[in-house]
Length: 262
Image (cartoon, rainbow, N blue to C red):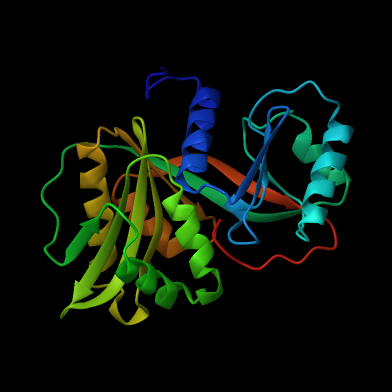
């Protein structure tokens, strides 16, 4: 296993991308000559894209035709996730030449995990996605149409997970989740009711997951944040997160994609 302080960044990127696949499975997954083709009825770019993670032998043009046809059958646009270790190295350039647009540039932020002090009593942590957690996610995200898809995807996560709820006066006003894959923990879906932002609830949700991840044996935490989300980036920098790499999507021409999770 690669040490977390290894200078081989390409191997770390690959490990983080594998962890991200565990952090949000897809409804349908095809393994195609080193590429991972994921579909989830349009919920989240991450669960509806080609992840070109491993080396392959099939000619690139043939693979592009295969993927475009697969998404066309599902009545979805063809998306490719582009990151430093993606294969082949000229994929992004090729897609740009084919008029695939660049979308949703995202930072992958990482930090080392250490033992921390106990979290706030206003934060509750569960091992499963409870109805309360999902209802809080629906209310804060405004994405009721995707609730059942999300529930299905979360139930399919193969590794330890934590679902965190923040409350004030007994009312849920924030939520978040985390997934551990070996020595790496991913942090997702941190949301706080607009009326209660700036009051420390986001910090409490983050601390609860950092504590839990360390107890689960994780020693590196990562999260994914849109490049233009400065409030989230500021909070993450305060806790010691720093940019490891960026990824973005290439979107098939003449396709409309609902805004959603990076």
